[in-house]
Length: 447
Image (cartoon, rainbow, N blue to C red; front, side):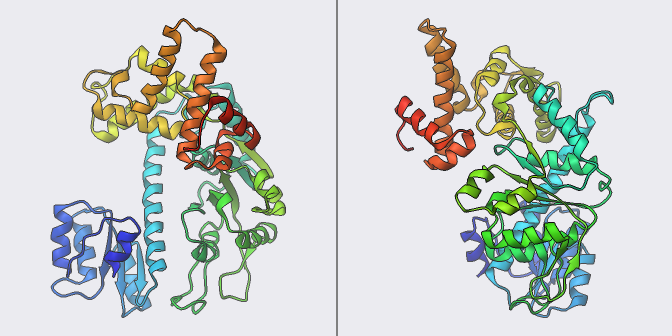
């Protein structure tokens, strides 16, 4: 049943009958997550957990048992289990626990990246932020704003396209604040099913629903004294928006199934790639919550609007990706001038995240000492080819060259959104009417 369920959710699954077989399988292949029953023949779940830890195998282990009790759960956690599920359980509960485990691993990797970034931080007299790369005027303005707002508890709303570094800014706000020693808790509101999101944020009491076998803290309580980062806040269901507004105003939350309020001391930083003003106008987002969240609004510019930062970002990602891939610093010394020109010409619809992935792609294929155009992804090279055709024809008009870049960007965003014009207009940060005009001008049909 679990194999069918998890394959349907997109996981690659291997199933074995006992702990000994599991250990052999895990040693033969690499696994990110392990769902293990407590009681199994030959080797039980707790023994398997102990053996994995003894052999330093870094899989995240989640225990399951029909004989659930607090002592067993505590013992499993003590031995290194990430979580514990009591049978019988609902499919959604298993999926939620796995997604939480993935999110934890993602945050762990992000922390590692931040530590690497800290090793490359600027001199103390520079006003840069930990983990942030860029010396453009736009970024310096953001750095100064972050340093001003970090000391206060006021809610921060981060806006900007996907891949612009909103979570890095949220972490920088936390690290520079008096709350830095306390937890920084992050959650992607779009990654958790609506039916489970309320319980995830506010917690639940034992008996609140069929599988609630114990009291459980929500993320607001986990972040008590620290910072709660709500990513993709625009995905929050309208019903939960009311409860979030109350939590922000009263600084109290109520667990699902409880009758008592719990006071929490949490600074909330929210982030979204959506235009919340447009969402309010469309009736999909509460106006009172929008104004409550945007006490300190901060917009992160897309990479195409701060291209002077690209050379420094390229250098940083070359060093980091080389280290992560096991390539020594002397193997790839940099990029050719032609490749750097292409980096500067390309529109980067995926922003900094796309740039990092492009560098990693190039390093995998690179055989020389420098990254050249030929090892870059086809979508990046296409930009060069179209510009070259225009320039070879003797047309040196800035207006016409800009038109080519605009058309390329619109095509990529429409493809990314599956032809959704409204969403494409949001990502492009232009009005829906302006997008329709551009589509007609460029002769672009729905992709």
